[in-house]
Image 1 (cartoon, rainbow, N blue to C red):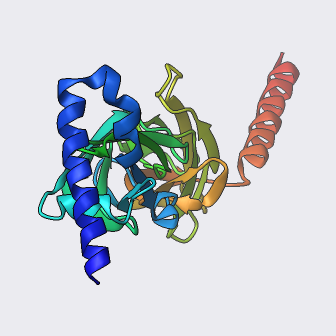
Image 2 (cartoon, one colour):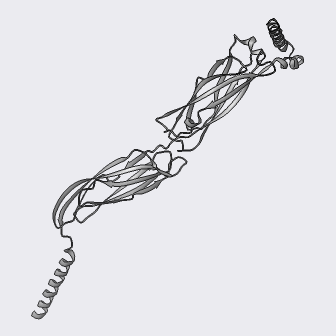
Image 3 (tube, rainbow, N blue to C red):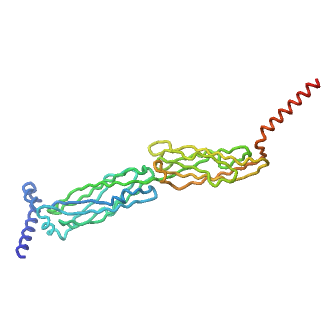
Length: 318
């Protein structure tokens, strides 16, 4: 026991002497001090499953759990740290690389840890907020730098790590009906509406349109699937979809007024199971007038026969 204490005391004195001598005579003492130096070692780890799970831009924040493991290594890595048992080593964390379309913070970004050969671990959160310019399901990379200060014979160092993450699909449409949503037509007419759709989301989007809850006797047709580019990158994010509505045309007088519902759903162009919220647009149609379906040809023939008879009668009179 006495021998161990004596060895420890000698090593401690040598470390102190080496540290002081290194400051005074750095060039000549380098080899001597290296014998007692311990070198910092930092391992940065993170939850890969959480990082690679897509999350929505704009309204969501992702927190990726990280761990910082700090240890020292060297010839006397079990003894040297004992001389600094009452001192904390300062560790600084910085973001050195990130995409332009996100903000990233580390919490905390400064640690105080004891030096040990076995290592100690602290937890850190990487907090990411993505804006609307992030391409959906693309890979974002974040570069992290960790600086460890030198404390006497405990050498510092700089360490780097990269963390990847995936922004999710952010479906957002802007709808415009230039001619309005109300039209008045006859029973044998049709109402046509042009729906201008602008893709304001962060990925190429397949827009699915359906007329729903149609009243009995009414017919509506619309382009069911329309692929629209995203405006990110300078592409044209607008397309026009036509809706055509035909009211009932049974024989007789009509004065029908109905509201036709159109459901518009944005979906991710490579996987239509990834959808956004549905948009509902309401169109009001007034069908008013007299309808004679199927009698037009007969009526024309009747008129033609009548005209022929009149002409023949006039010819006989002459």
